[in-house]
Image (tube, rainbow over all chains, first blue to last red; front, side):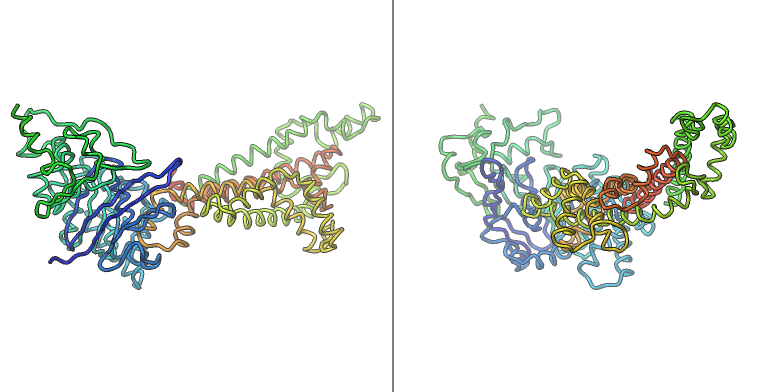
Length: 333
Length: 305
């Protein structure tokens, strides 16, 4: 068995809102081995970011996540003390956020903020933290790294700031990196650059990564494992190759039809869409949440939804094959 | 940074000149100064003689230049009422007003900022409500009433503090509280609002994600950004306290500069009024300049703009 780093069992995140409870994440399971890249895919509001914040213990005071198990290398994250969590955050697990423009403190220099990430956890002299900061800035492809240390965030472009954020996450050499849509806020022209950089660094340093994205093209290139989230549930999980070659859940198939894949999508053919919108998650949620948008929905979808296993691949649907045979018939007809 | 300071300094000097000209022009806006000096019973010839004696018959710009150069040397002329040099008259009074102003703003900041931070850390908690109550009360209570209540309670009933005068430091306690409490609500509310906004920003989440302890997040990462507008406000409040402490000075019989200004206006003592306006305006300018420099140090984005 590979070296297990992270195990999540039945993670539930309820958010109190005016007039009820928003069941934002409902019972998701996944695990991650050292050095593995897991991509969590899904639409906005599917609970991807909340899941990652829950792992970091950054959901805030008002939101209390629950899980039967949420272990990071033997530490139960949900029952760990604040001090233990602080010791993990930034040292053994780091996070890269979506918004590089606002994620750096405008009042301090890049150098101060980079060095802080190390000085908080390691008992090293400032000169050593400084050397590490320069080393990592060079690693993330920033030229004249030494002189950048004295610059302030407002003097850097969005792409540079995200490179700084990546360097900051790496300061202590963490075992797990959580990147929450790290390129969404950037120019399309540099999205690919930043992502490639991140993936290369993760591979080079042997870290595990949870990459949250809704860009399936990215997933196809970098993921070892894929978890597809829809409206707070994991509808399908499995090895990336298997998910792309044989997607089982109707939602996963719908998602894959929405993007052109090299070698799979025929030139000139129309890209798919998924009709409808994500249902409200306030109040009691039961049955399959995708039934309102699913072409194969029946009365049975309102009841309990079984989990099907196909080797390492798992999906939840009332139909044994996720409606795959029906779909083929329709295509032929 | 150096360039920024130089720019601000140039601007401050420009404003100072403008203000000095306006305060000088007051002399002419208030009617014929020679006639006012001579009194109602004076003959036309007496007025002319006075006009010549005080130099009011010279061109206005010449008089302004004359007055400005004297003022720069610390000579503000002679008070019409006291028949004493204005400079000496103001100097004594100013030290009282300055003491009161510095103590007042210190009291306001030392109560308002911690309360504002505590209220922002736990919004809608007991401490937030207490802070809100204190600030509403501070805004609603007129200074003269609050001052009198303090005198009744602490001087007359409890006999803890002297009711009026400037003999000892105890004499300054109640005036400081009354003056400071007046400035406290605005500073407190601004601190709270600033902290709330900053605490929900992305870079605070980044600081937490780095594993920074909560105290460090609050004070190193959040407060420094939240305090920037408070610095500007405090500078204006400080200037206001120096010029506008007349009510407090009257209640506690502290014969400071504010009180002197009020008296001199009533007596038509124009050289004194002119000098006081100029000095109060200079304080405003100096405080605003210092606040700008402090803010530029706190927020690097201001330095480049």
